[in-house]
Image 1 (cartoon, rainbow, N blue to C red):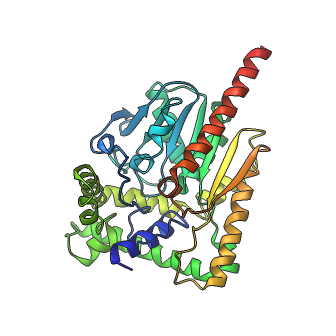
Image 2 (cartoon, helix red, strand yellow):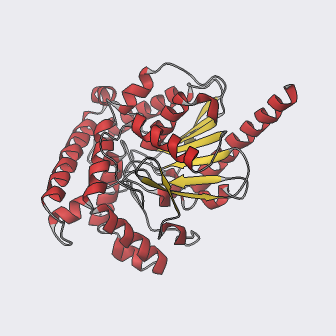
Length: 362
C-alpha cells in the first residue's frame, strides 16, 4: 500500500474515532480522497462568510433557499470541503450551510477545551449571528455526529431532524472487551498526536521531514491531487499549508482529547430523548474492512459492536433508523454521497410534513 494511502486510512480511523480506514497515520484528520471530477472546489479555496462569534470568526458557506435549513458538521480534523459532493445536491431543494469549526479551514483558532459543549455553543452563536433561524436539520459526520446530537439535546425546540453519518459513538471500555487491537491503535494514535503538538510548538514542521509527513493532513496527497486539475491541486495545498499551523494542531488535539470518554460519555449519559423527531443514522459497512493490522475476528466483533452503537443512537428517537451503506467506509459523504443526500432529503421531507401538520392544527 502506498504511504499516502496508508496514512489516509489509519489517521481517518484513529482521528475521527473509528474512521475511514482508507489509509493514514498522520495526526491530521479524516481521509480526504481526490475530489470527484464533478465537484466544484472554488468555494473551498477562499473564505466564504466570516461570522463573529465573540472575538473570533467562523467561516460559513450557505447555498439554496427554503426551510428547514440543513446544517452540515464535519468530522474531526476536517473542514467544510468534506461536503463538496453533498451540499450542491441538497441546495436544489432548500437552504444548506456548511462551516469550518474553530481552528479548521478558514476559521479562527479557539482556546481549549474544544469539547462537544464548546462546539455546540459556537454553532448556536454562529447561526444566530448569521441570521439563520430555526428549524434546523442537523447533519454530522463521524465526531461531528456527536456534536450535532449535543446541539439537539441543548436546543431541542430548534431542531427538526438529524442525520448522523457513521457517527463516532465510541467507548474504549466497549471495544476493549471484543477488539483490544483497536484500542491499542487508538492509544498509539493519541500518543503520536501529542508528539506532533509538541513538535509544532518547538518550531515549524519542515516539508520532507518525518514530523511533517507524520503530522500534516494530506502531506502526501498534494502530488496526486495536482494531477486532477488546478482547483484540486489548490485545495490539497491549502489543506496541507493550513494543517501545519500550530493553531490547527492545537484545536485538533483538544477535540481528540475531549472525545471518547469525554464527549461520547457526556452525551450518552444525558438520557433525554428526541421523541419522534425524524432521524437517520448511516453506517458504513466497510468501516473496519481496511484494518489489516487487526485480526479478522476482532474486526468482525468491532463491526457488530459498531452496529449496536449506531442502533443505540438511532433509538434516541422513536422514529430513528440505522441504515447500512453497503459499499462505503467511514467517510460516506465521499464513498457514497447519494446515500447521504437521500437521507437528508427524507428527513427534510418528514420535517416539512410535520411543520405543515402543526400549522394546520393551530
